[in-house]
Image (spheres, helix red, strand yellow):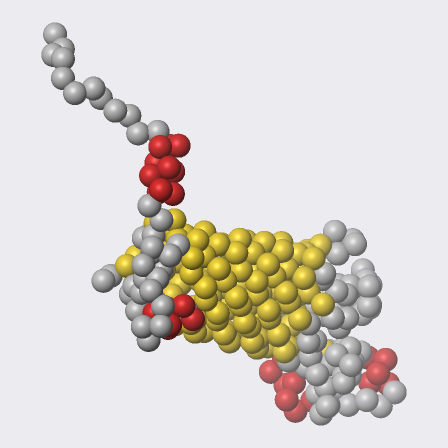
Length: 257
């Protein structure tokens, strides 16, 4: 027989959300790890990132270039007093050509994120107690790779982003960010991944083919990737697209202090 006492209360999902939203977290400086996951749209501008070829192996221009792509991003960082955070990142996007072949591009490396409002708070110029928004800016540098089985490029990329987070709780936030990436690919395109072979690129970032070799251009035709420094002509350059990517992000925070 059940005795009459305090009624049992069940916590519902809407109730949990109301509890979180009724007591927003503060952007007050904190130290700890965070994991950020994001997804959105990526726009690749430029006209020299050729990533497809004809069935007979000829280099073509209509394999260029990616435009709108779906992108995903992950970052792992360590916030120091809510004013700066070294972080590592992976950024990846993919696209399809007109013949339904698939290509992808992305960046991986590290960078530094700074929190302007947190800096102002540390200087005692602002009081962020109870303020639920967090603004940050980041600079990144990393390895860049883009292409398909037919054409693959490698190089370096510099990136910058601006992010605004809504601090729902001390351990979770959602927000929006926009990334700007400026990859600089090497003047060589890999056309056979398994054999580690490819083509040198000219000053317009176009592959130098066997036909060019017949016409007397140094570095024409397929060569081993390891021999590119001695066989590719000087003055060549790799593709230089610009990537702009707005995203929605979720950040999981593990505050230590």
